[in-house]
Amino acid sequence: MVNPLNDMATIIPENAPAHCPGTESEDAGKASACQGCPNQNICASSQPKPPDPDIEVIKERLSSVKHKILVLSGKGGVGKSTFSAHLARGLAHDENTQVAILDIDICGPSIPRLMGLEGEQVHQSGSGWSPVYVEDNLGVMSVGFLLSSPDDAVIWRGPKKNGLIKQFLRDVDWGDTDFLVVDTPPGTSDEHLSIVQYLSEANIDGAVLVTTPQEVALMDVRKEVNFCKKVNLPIVGVVENMSGFVCPNCKNESVIFPPTTGGAEKMADNMKIPFLGKLPLDPRIGKCCDEGKSFLSEMPDSPAAQAYQQIIQRIKQFCQKSKDDESMDLT
Image (cartoon, rainbow, N blue to C red; front, side, top):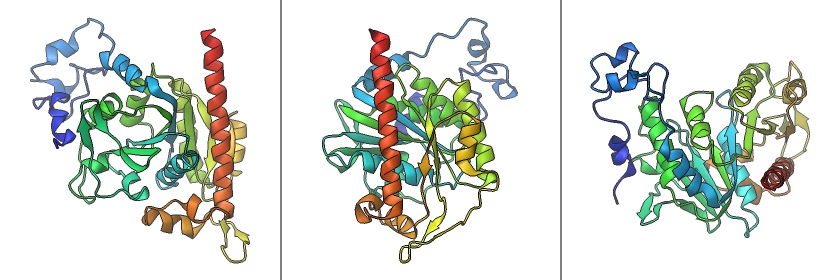
């Protein structure tokens, strides 16, 4: 099989300068890094840049995907990828629901480990790249499948990361899919701008924001909320992860991260966005993630699993309403 990473040269020219701002940037052809680049005059041209033709290709490719959900977090380490993995697993609990998860955390792809797929490889067919399947109704795509070792570092600048994200959206054969969950890196940078731009014509349902209760995490999530508003990305709601520790034995709850400013629920109320619920800490979640197992299947009666199911149900209801509203707009 041809490793798709080797195809990136067709998207990012080898002669591009190290600090290339990208052809769609306002600084294209004007930044100091552009000096001496053979494409400088073209990039600096005052002519308006035409729309990216791949956006229409991506729209067509994803036309068979009913719902598209981004999972975002302002702060790293709040359990965003763990939530993404269990959101996908929870949606796929219904065997009649086809689910896919796309990992665009290019520099820290943890989804293969969380889904029990480390060491798997991507395969190509006449219809494009094929996702790696956990179950018959749960497919996964990640840069982690393209690395020779889980310990390999991906040391890429923005344009090359954006190029791979475009390839994932344009070239992966998702087939008829009910839910596509996109796990993003922390923050509001290249990957987030790219995914929103590339999906601009593909009808994103919205973004789920994951945080922990303490203010140091909430202050970054507020930035994420403002990012969503600026790029017109609907917000499905906020999830407060690690919201207290529930002892697996006595079931008593202890506060580990004190919500000194009221936690995610108060923040959501202040910013007029939906609050989806709280997920308690449970050490068995981490153990299941390390082993690539579904916590929802392993401990279905635990308080954390029940909280997950309630939040997943609210996300499904949001997506159904989004689809109903879209149908009304077409009529």
